[in-house]
Image (cartoon, rainbow, N blue to C red; front, side, top):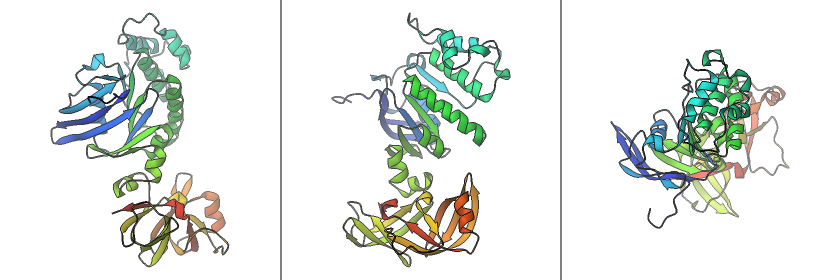
Length: 360
């Protein structure tokens, strides 16, 4: 990277083949306090990328940067990386205090290192220092693992789906605790997950990974609201992706022919008449009503019929035929007030600014 300023943490053109799988030209950069979330399905290469950043593998090509320095050739023990796994990897025969003290072995001999007692107090663990992991709750185990990681004086945190094995309610609680911890720690973190809520809750920057490569890198807002491809759109919860053709563009609004309907969408620079596009509509951007509002400024209002309804956490997922397949999310209150059921006739409204176009 001659002539290029090295990122505080990142990779440049990172490539590695392990068996039949390959990391392909992975590049990213992050600052000293960023949390960078890598979102992707199982088998995308997320864990292999973390292991390469930690030094468990030497890349075939490319560079790794940690703390603003080229760490590509550095052994794992010299990288000051704290790696957290799903099971937290606590030593069952050691107490909480002893587990945290173990992390101190990797911190060097800094005279100003925070005492273990202070680390325990910082994470609310001082009253359970004599307990062993089998006596701890899941949240306590997570905090012990974080205290041990802090004791290492790390330059970088790596998280490999640490909440994946937990039930939804417990995962929500620990996710909130983890967000607070990362905000207070002031240490860069790379967090891999296949969970969209985790990505949105934790990320300053994020990437979507597929088949060993980053297919989009950006802020959570950019990736969730403006996916760069159909693959990304499908993965980040865009339930409706329609094939269409640009009929015309006027005053920044594109008219899209999709099946028997015409959609109005905010145009982008590459949308041209006769251009083939994908129109992406997030389910939370679809509003349902029983009657049409003549004075509404919403350009897209379609007669629709409810095909199916399914509970989805605190919301209801409503599958519709609006002249094209359409999915909406509604609250429990809206579900009751609208009297939704299979066969119900409704009006589906979508703002032009809520439809994201991907040119084919």
